[in-house]
Length: 433
Image (cartoon, rainbow, N blue to C red; front, side, top):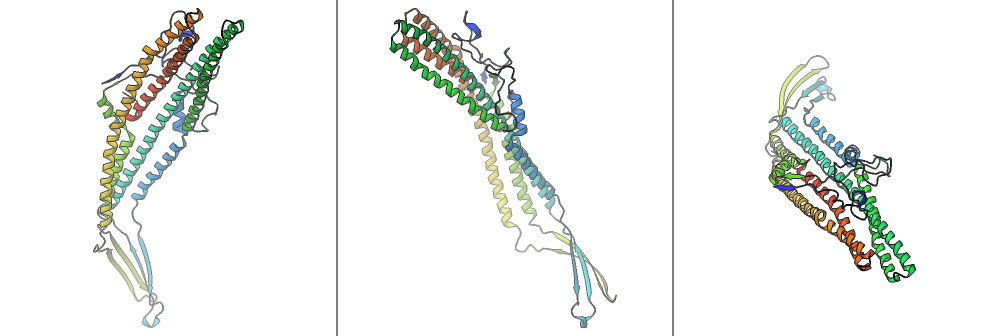
């Protein structure tokens, strides 16, 4: 049994700290279901793209998905071809046309209709239908992977934007400190070396902000590419929060769900059905067809009339489709091995996703319950001591660096946790029970 409880999205706010965040103005994302409807950072008066809307647009506009749908329809057209009956053959002829001394010209007209024996038509239909099922499952599997891609890109945007907001708050705090310390340096209460140390610290904070902005741009590019370049404007925003969903499902139940819902596994099973149907079709083609023939003949002088009935059949003395029978049998064995591997890979995907989710839960819980609160408390105490002259600037900057690292790691851990949940959903082939 794997039990993963949804972590709180915001740390408990100490008394006197404004804004419902961490001391010093830190704002951390809230979990789904909180009172906030819009994600912080969205443009005022502008509604952002929600995750459900992004998924709906992706399923409607994604170009590889559209190409796969057309491929499936092309494969389904094989069912029409497979069910067709062979065309009859009309054979006209004339004799004595250039030898009048042998008699008047005689004309013949014969019609033959091949009749397929050994159930060839039904075997073709079974093979084509299995191919259509495999193509349909391939399309469903592409939707599964596209859903995962959109969810992960959406989460990456939330992480990048929350990180960008946090880095701006960190810069704002450092800028205020630098402004105060510059005044102290001008009065001679602070050495120029300490002021340079603060300015040097600023570089790391500016790098964090630049990296967050770059990550946000890349995440938006990834999401827009997954949805479709023409589905919405290039300058878009998203609206949402970290889901931090609770997961409490037995491992074996997840295995059973994956085995019954994974589209790629169903596609492998359909491919095995087609390979076996192809082998049965090859065996059916070892039996020759029979072609009944009816004919009529007549002459110019009305001296000869005739009507003939017969049949033609190939004699399978040499070619009994042995090579195709052997090839399709071996191909069925090959596809069977791939199907068994697909089942093994499915279980491995579930195990890997569970391990990733458990690791993400441990890190998120540790950061939320231990390290971020401690870093926040240490930062607040050292800042107070520094303002009173009881702590050095190096101690304060060290506390500030630790606080920065913990808060950014906490934001990233929330995105990692959501991404792990989405990966597990993809591994089992749909929403978790």
